[in-house]
Length: 344
Image 1 (cartoon, rainbow, N blue to C red):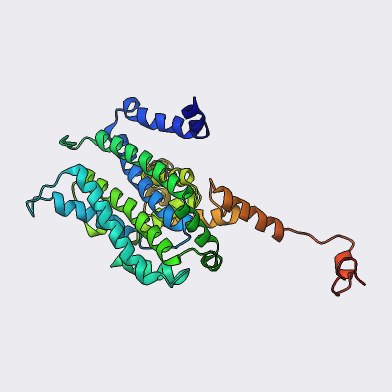
Image 2 (image 1 turned 120 degrees about the vertical axis):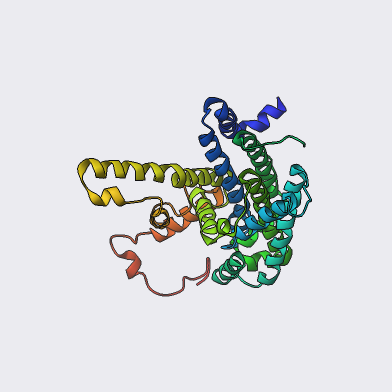
């Protein structure tokens, strides 16, 4: 009974997890399962970036670099070129640890930077057990689901730990956090390291499933897409970030492709050349930009905001929306300091 009471707040998440576990059994289309497995990779990436951006408040535009490091670490170990052929499961952890080390290396020279300057440095860095899975996407899908579940549990525990509270303090105010005894150096380094760790995990799984790795797979657009997933879902909210990653990935892979096909069909049927030539897939970043602009105007905290961020946004909105009395009494009040209580 005690275990059931602990799981009660997460009943919605457990129900969604059950649906994901049953999905390959209900949909036997290998293409759909493969797309879901790819979406799970980006969910894992978004969870890692949420530690850096959502928890610690550090803007990272080079996050795809850790994705690439994890991918290449696994590829070099599993490739026949070096005759290593290291096992799949140990290399998942090794690739993630290698990416975490590079996260520390990136974080070390950027500790004195914040805001736009930190973003520029990270952007530069970004440019700079015996079972054979084969080509069946279902085993990769279930493996990713299992790793995501374990990652969510670990991230939630981290968020509620002393380190997680230190990340949140740094996010809100570095000066106040430092004055309260929080070591900014180690706090930021651990945020970069943990974020890179999950990115390396995703990279190893991605290249193991795909069977090929290329630098073109890890350009700046990947970092931007992952950041958009975090912002869309709600920075700091673990389950919101998962939802944002799933929504945005399916939008770019399924919805835009279907819109392009429907547009071409309508263009040929109605004789409209512009509709027959438009390609929504190539316009995805324009649509991302427009979507983020409207999101910042209508719901700047994201679709599923974290409680703290939602409270801050609500408080700021209330303060900005204060209206002076209609009779102008505020303007008529004398511009003098009020006397102390009980004094003349």
